[in-house]
Length: 126
Image (cartoon, rainbow, N blue to C red; front, side):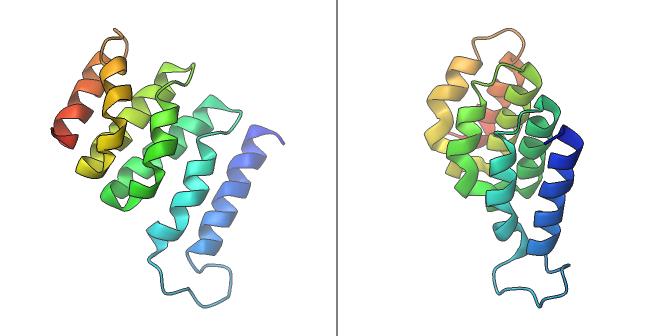
């Protein structure tokens, strides 16, 4: 699947989860239902799609807590933009992202991602 088609498929699923597909929305908040779709986006072939998925999870803040393991895995992505977006997202999740501290501490030792990883660690707390 070409990257643009993959993004369109993800958006289609996310819109369906948001209740835009003609059926009444489920009881769970839209964000909670979108987290698994966005977490799957962290494994996309296209690095831009992976980074966008991480950024979207970051915008959800603590609501994205169930994606912490996926975001922590994304901290090891070969693309610095994906690693940085995952670190920012983990910081936005806050204290619930504490299991990712070791991976963020390792990322804070890398020159390209030192600042963003350090900020995420501050937001997560001890």
